[in-house]
Length: 444
Image 1 (cartoon, rainbow, N blue to C red):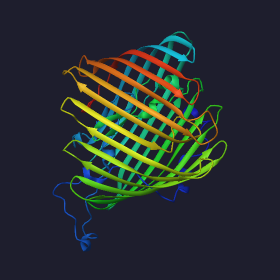
Image 2: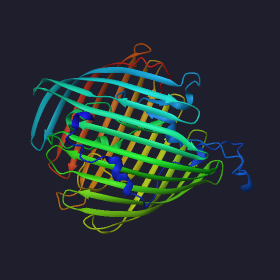
Image 3: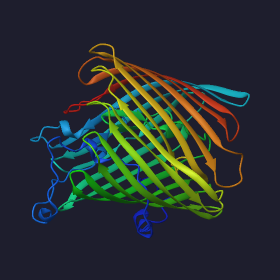
Image 4: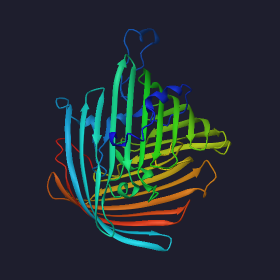
């Protein structure tokens, strides 16, 4: 986000070096990667014949910015075509009804969503860089235009025998009103895209906000069923002319596959929060289990205690994560996710944010599909304020593919803030024309 040079005050990667005390990771264990015929080499042979290195399963999928629930499954790419330049755009007409307390207003906009991506996939490494702005031009009820920028970078690469490096960085800059009109953000779990629950968070009329999230994960795969992962990262939120906050953290976890379908994860974590009004620390522990019920159904469940210092309401808290992906059939899929995050991407001075999300999609015919998404977020403030912030949203899409590259989509979204400030809501109805000439297999 070079356009926000005044907001970037300190290089995020310099601050991550202070996170050398490590803690719990909620990443997937190695069950999904383990081959059914894999064998653990004897201890005396480890130095002579290192195990085959495989990247974490989450690095095998790349969520595409600006394309509404589309993602690239890197494992399906043909080995002779490993580098791809992808591009496309969407054009939408939206009609909105925004209410805050007893006041309300109606207006309409035209939204343009171009996107570009460069993606490389080989047998054991991956690379992607993406950029997707949402350009909003008001056509009634207000004047001017807004731009919400979204950028993403990821790199997964072996660096030594049995060692792999995973680097990710995401940046956004713009107003909530423009962000809420753009394509939703998704996480990919087991090949199923699940809506990012932070999409429910909005604080309209607060000006433009710059956010950045950076993670560096170093992973040692001892053998095909055991691995140790160390992660450091930073999350920063910088509103224009308002209070800012940042979080630096470290995570250490040990994953082991106890059977061909079940795995365990043990870890610890440390967070250092920096607010405009003060600092606080938190550390905790996590125990998790992953189980593959069938060839397609995966579930991950984990949690543990979290200890916090003042002003983060010093005392004992907890952390948790639940994730499940269910391809119900060849034409329908269901994804569920719930978690507690200590690094909020959209709200300042928050102690933690509880989120939950559900995504369902069904292909009604070869050309017509329907998608339902819903997200919920509750953020507990670390400092004295109006109380816990609670918001949710629901989204329904009906898409019609006119050709291999062109589709028409009708969308309805409802955003609602129910506590933590004046009640406000937003109804959005839009019709979109999308053009995505992507030369690879795209799953939607």
